[in-house]
Structure formats: structure tokens, C-alpha cells
Length: 594
Ligand code: F6R
Image (cartoon, rainbow, N blue to C red; front, side):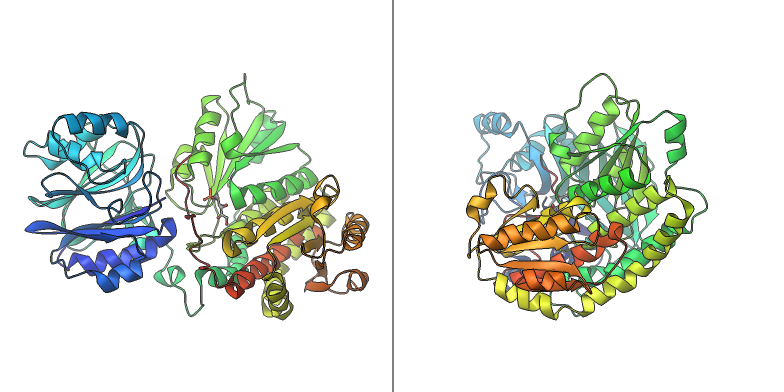
């Protein structure tokens, strides 16, 4: 969580920092601030969004600076708790993403040594420690300070006395942008895409010294070479491109995401992940771990892999995974994480590796921490996802799971050929869904008046009920719960009634009849029903109050078209309620704390 940026070059730092912070707001947006070095350190910060800071900030002249946009962990959102934080002299400024676990004891120690603190944050100990250890070299002082700190951090340090940025990372992402006579640092690539696509990812334990012409990175006191990468995302992908919100733009990008993934994976001669090896190694099961929306993709993956490959699949919420047992030697572990930086997912990967389990990461971010700790990485081709609510990354994850399962399927050739055709038609089916949003808009207007909603589905669309509920609650603030349709009657029926609409996801597969029965049960309790159903399904029209028609696809692909409808439903409901769709309260894009 929290976005940090740094700039050093010939330009005025302030506009660069504020522009980059604007692109990083999805990491946190309860307060923000900048510090610029120009003779002295000048700081401007407040508990406001970046756009307001841009309007209010005075000119802080200087060509080196740092910035921060915050997702509060330690101390409420306020002007004093906003970053950057300074030492007693005001000559050292720090922005930090992460959590310092031992900050209370460090703070007491520093106070006893005469340091004065002005915020409630854990971060504030860092500039004071640097001040304490400063003896003519900023990087040495940063190194000494970080030696006594326990926890996670990505930091950028600015000092009035030295024309450089000192940066360091441990368990929080940090990327350096390289350009001619200027350098950038940020938590995430979109922050610097306007200026460069040449980047270097810092490794855990690295300390870097950045000037406008030079980058020097050390690890354990020894200078190291870190590979330069080229980013293939373009600036336009990280802009709204005429849409009201990033979320809507990203929903509309899904046909392209599906196409890009198909081009990427179905045309490669060699499989990226050798599941054949899985058979040779006697692997008997698959374990998939993930959080939030990625967890819902994993649940869909269970149906796909069990159906097509025939191996048992276990899916667990990454934060609940605590397998310290004897061995997972006969299990292939897959960790799905869009950002590749989710603390719970990374911890799960480390635990898996601790018991010598081979881990494949499915992530959207090249160079992310997940890609570095996993044994193998499959990249989704979603492009940058800026809106806090995950949409296109979910679809891209499903595409990778289809591709993986189909590659190793035991299904007969005819079924596979049919599926391949079905996969190729998916972009146009999704486009059809996007082009026929009128009923969804009407349903959203209706839904926006309610405060409690249930989503139900069966089989491969049960995870879609969970995802539909998550999407609705996170952006519209309507309380929503996803249920396996057959499970609702085991308790939650007590809440049904005319004020509790139920969204039913009805697929043309073996679950169809049972879904109709469940809908009748719900209707008998007077709950209004909005059904998502295939085109041509006339029966459902007699049962449901509203029907959102989805294009007909092979039932195994129904989650792909259904999710688009559910995303649009959540989007338009939130819009109707006037919610800040791209930046829902209390949330942030990558959850780098446990
Ligand atoms: C919901 C959402 C979150 C993420 C979750 C995992 O819209 O975006 O639930 O899916 O925080 O994030 P990643 O996939 O980055 O590990």
C-alpha cells in the first residue's frame, strides 16, 4: 500500500512528483505530500487527494524531490501523519511504504536521546535514525538506520546537503526509471511511464544511490549489477482514455485482454509451464492460493482443471495457508496475484518454498516480488490495472487457467477443438455483452436503492457469485454476500424479503434445473430476483423480475461473460450512488501488509 516517488534531474521536481503521485493514487489516497530539495528541504503535505494538493501547494523550487500517497496503517489520515517525514533539523526527508514493526521501542530510545516526534507514524523513526547515524555520508547513515529497523520498507531519502536520492527496499516494491540526465524512483511502473520505459527493479536488501546521471546499487556493502528491463505497457494504457473511470475503461478492455492472452499463449510452441513434468514427477494434485478477486479466479480454476485435467485441485485463501506439514512434494502449487506484491500471497509462496514445493506464480506485473520468489512465472497480459477494483486482471487470470488446463487436458480431441473455437470467439462474445449494457443500467438503478443484496450461483458460476458480491460491496458500499445457490436456504433465507434482492447467475449446464428451483424458493420469500441468463432462455423470464441476457458460450467459459455483466452492474450501481469508483474508501490496489 502507499505509493512513493522520487525524481532527480534538470526539471523542476514538483510537477514531476505530483504527476507521478496522481498515477500512483490507486496504492492509497487518504493523504499525500512532497518534499523538494533546493538549498533546504521544503515539505508540503495534507490529508487530501493529489488533485487538491496540486491546487494548493506553493512552488517548492528544486530539481530533486520525493513524494508519497498514503494508505494509513500506523496513525489516522491527517496532515501530521502524511509523508514525507523529517528529522529534527528538517534537513532529511523520507517517504516510506511498508511497516516498521519495532518502531515503538526505537521511538522511545530516540526520544530519550533528545529527538522530538510530531506524528503517530512508524515511518518517522527512519529520518531520526538517519540523523542519529549521519556522519558525512547519507547512504551510510541510511544503511545504519535500516540495520536497526525490523519490518518491511521501500524508502526514498532526500537530504538538503547532498544532490542525490538514497533508496532501499525490503519486502516492498521499488523500481528505478532510467532516462537521459534524469532518474526516477517509484513503487510502481505506471508512475514513471510518462518519462521512460527503461527500468531496474531493486531486490530485497538493496540500497541505491541515485543522481541524475548515475545509479549505484549495493547489497551487503558490495556493488551489484541489476538487470535493466524494458516495459511494454504504454502510457495510454495507464490513462483513462475518455472514460469516466479507470474501472469502466478496464472493463471495456477485456476483449483485447483475451485476444492478447490467446496470441501470447496459444501460439507458443513450448508450454510455459511443463505440466508434463508434473506427471513425470508423480504430481497428484494442484494447490492454488490467492486473495480477493484472484482467489475467485482460483476457484473457477478448480472447476476448469478438475474437469479438463482430472487432477484434484485444492484452493485456499493465501492468508489462511499455514501448511508446515511433512511435504507437499506431490503437489504443484499455483499462486495467483495480479500485483505480485500482495503480502499474504508472498508469504504463502515463501511457506510453500520452505517445504520444497514447486511454485508457479500467475501475475500481471513483470519483475514483481511474486515473479522473483516463485520457481516459475506466467504473466497475464492485462496491461496496467489502475482501478482499485480488479476487473480485466480476473479475466486474464481465467484465460491463463483455461490455457493451462487445455494444454494438459485428458478431454477428447473433439471437445478440445470445440473449446479452442469457443476461446477464439470469447472476445466477440464479451464485446456483445459490453455493447448491450442497457438492461444492466436499468438493473443498477433499481439495485442502488437497496442496502443488502445476495448473489447466488452453482458449479463454475458459484465463484462468480462471490466475485459479483465483492465487486458490488467494494465500490457501491452496498452490503452483498455471494452464496452457493443451494446453500442459501441453510440459514441465510432468514434475511430474504422484499428489501433483499437476489442476483442469480444461471448457466446452461448441469446446474440449470437446480438454479430454477432455487430461484422459485427465493421468489416465494418475496425477494426481487435479477437473473443473468443465456440469450434464448425464455423460462427464466417467467421467474425473474429482471433478466440480464448474456451471450451464449460453452458453459465452461460462462464465467468470462458473466463476470463482465457483474462488473458493469457493480459499476453502474456505484455510479448511481455517487461513489468514488476508482478509489473506494479504506482500500488500496496492492495490499502489501498482512
Ligand atoms: C478486489 C480486488 C482485491 C484483490 C486482492 C488480491 O477488486 O482487487 O480483492 O484481488 O487484494 O490482489 P492481488 O491479485 O494483487 O494479489
